[in-house]
Image 1 (cartoon, rainbow, N blue to C red):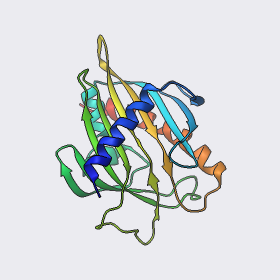
Image 2: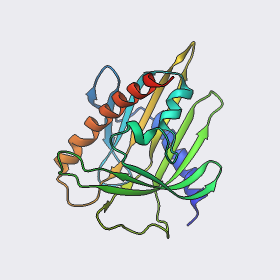
Image 3: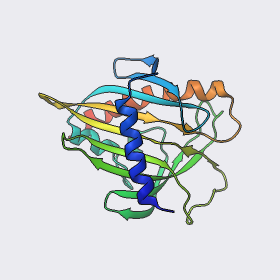
Image 4: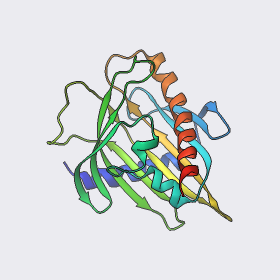
Length: 209
């Protein structure tokens, strides 16, 4: 499988989601984030967009978000139980397995996901993490986990002009959780989960020295 090609394609796809303002409908709003959704072009579900300002420099916010083994993300993100590196394809492209705990009061059982993840830096100081599902010979489906599939997803840490202590964070989730879950469970889980994501991230950034 051409992981590099897939990585570059998902970078382009995520950027198009960020630029395209059409068709988004607000489904949840708090002081931290506005969550919108629209039908996915990738699968029979939705793509969700979160947008909010985080009190913290882009460097601090990115430190909390970046995909790394034993990094900060697994400590504060309640939706990530474990993060494993399967292959380092290049300096900025890696293949990872992510394990998620059970959720929605146990209705959603533990999942695992295998993704190619690309890190991209833009000239304006924006840093993005871009991911999509792939298969990898070292990681067939595991007993005890339902294999889920992330369609193009990720986040953008964008500097706020004139305010170095703030970061505009765009996040995109587009996940087929797999298994036989009722649509109503899935549709209520993601907006709530994204609000929690922003709230927990804000606390994690605040706690950094």
